[in-house]
Each structure stands twice: as structure tokens, then as C-alpha cells.
Figure 1 (cartoon, rainbow, N blue to C red):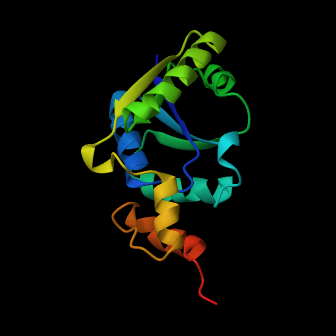
Figure 2 (cartoon, rainbow, N blue to C red):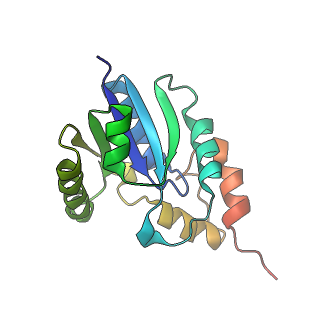
Length: 164
């Protein structure tokens, strides 16, 4: 039996923190599906789902057991349909835990056969989020320490505020 995990997120854009969690999950499971999902509470994304998929592929190409997919529906249904045993979520701080714990309980109620696995972020990524990256990039700040080098130019070209 293959141990399949789903690592969901908006990844708008993917950060070094996301990549750390994906890489560590790839060592724990036979297959990790990085699942690009829409977060209704975050508004319009900066990158399309296809653009995010291409960026994730560019930075996870060396991880043979990682695949990327796009979700427009319930996570629990997707996890059931692919036969996954786990949902992997990264935690940066205690404030993340409260929200993620609620989601884990809801997903468990919807699909009891999958467990939510929380991986704590590396200390250097505790403050890092896609929102922080977007804010810094918008004002022309250096985001090279926050995102993989393979996609740095793509992110900057999209997000840097153009001077008029």
C-alpha cells in the first residue's frame, strides 16, 4: 500500500517555507500531492492556478514523488478520491494552529480515513507567508530570501508596483 499525502494551499506564490514543508513531507510519504486550492477568504489570487502549478513544478522537479494538482471543491472529497491517508499542513505559529485545528476537525468529520499531519516550520520561515512576499514585492523590496530562485523573476515581474 502506498502512503499518499495531500499538501493543500493557495501557494500564491510558493515560498521557501512552503517548499520546506513539501520537501519534508516527501521524505515521510510515498507520494505527495501538492494541491493548489482556492481560499475563499483571500480574495482574487495574484497568479492563476495554472501559473502557480508551473511555479511549483519548477521548484519541485527534483522531488520524484511529488505531483501537483488543482482543486475546486472540498479537500476531504479530493483526499478520499485519490486514496490519501494524510493531509499535511505547515504551522508557523500558535495562531496558525487554531485555524488549522478547526479545519482538521472538519476534514476528519467529512472523511474519517485521513489524518491531518502538522509539520512545524523551520525557524527561519516562521514569519514567512505568501502575503508577506506579495507586500514586500509590491513596494520593490528584496524577496530573494523568501522565494526559490527559479521563480524569483516571475514573481517580481507580476507583483512589483510599476512607477508611473
